[in-house]
Figure 1 (cartoon, rainbow, N blue to C red):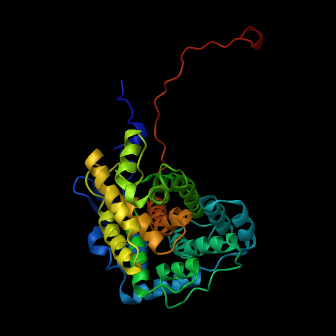
Figure 2 (figure 1 turned 90 degrees about the horizontal axis):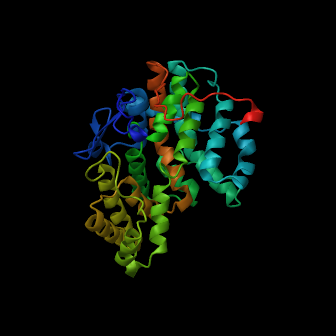
Figure 3 (figure 1 turned 120 degrees about the vertical axis):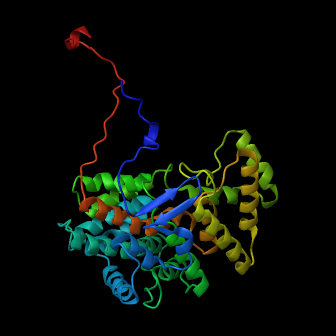
Length: 374
């Protein structure tokens, strides 16, 4: 008899990939062989997207060409622009992004092709459009017609902060948010990436695969933890952190932002985000949420032995940068678009339909009876 299936496919290898790798015991993350500690703060998000989607860190000339392609590709199509106001009035952020990316697929000039060159073009357009979709959604739902125009001198990170907050970010704010995007760009076979690859493996198009990923990220067991971390911080009195956390733990409530299915030590992304939270707390002159986060981290580790994951300090970082709390998960999608699209490219390049088996646990040897005899 076959071994019992692993619940949640834990530790089951579902695909081969050259995009990212994790050493859970050592707490290390790699993008195409580069340690995240080597990339974070040194490599821009645009360079990282190029690395993931096109296989290498770009030269200056390659980066300039890629940035030009991003600028040209961020214009939203007619269907998206026409429907954005109504979608913003009726749908929550992740629902809206699911709808808008689907509409963007209909407008895309390469929508009918999954050829390698078409996929590269679509990957760049999706990466360029995602921050604009989030910013325009936020503008319409808050009563503004449009966000500020993108500044061609700013990066994707800088322009997103400009369009969401309405003010030009400082150079350091843009650099820190850029590092956030790098840290979230890819993370092996997480739920949304797996969903994208399953869809792509049917030879469906890239936009369909990304819609599958966004729908999966919408689920609270995958996305939304950083938003819940911020809500928890806001619900606790700054002088009552330890007691509040212990009461939650005693009541068997989960403290979001701690523990990870893969990492057995500290999430390497959390290491950078903790430092960024501390820096922003000092520069803004309000260290309340950083101090609370540090105390919460200490209590959870003392009580449960759990380390913070990427979501925990991301919450205070995004808050200090002026990003609305309910946009935290959409911000994740801005970054992860680079990884999702790279996985779709990789899947299409060496494809086989993903069709796992299942173990039947229902009744057997049932006999049919006419309806009047049941």
